[in-house]
Image (tube, rainbow, N blue to C red):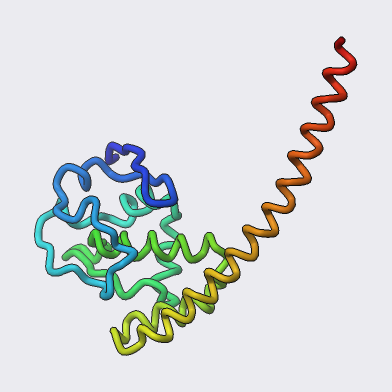
Length: 169
């Protein structure tokens, strides 16, 4: 089992295998901004991860990783001679980005469209940009809605706190 530490990303907390932190030249890069699915050819064991290591690092199940690959959210992952999947750091970065899209409520069907556009290259940047802008509008609307709910909760906490304080005097 790979030793894990908690790292703090831009908006999330995630677990990173110790082997990645210590040996990878890609540790700390912002893979959300990558324009392609491959950094380059990697040939050492410490730069490639098994599906179990990726599952640990991302919090996704092995089943989900295989499903994402099967439906095309993740490109076909390279294989070792024993046919086991070997993920690059860029693959992990793409998976982390997909997790952020999913966490914002983007349906898998839209994620598939985005993934296909991303694979087609820079000529699809306008379409991807519009997809992300629409997602941002949806997320901001949801945040506004949650802020309104939070105001009610704060009001109730203040009201109940005053009532409890008045009883204990």
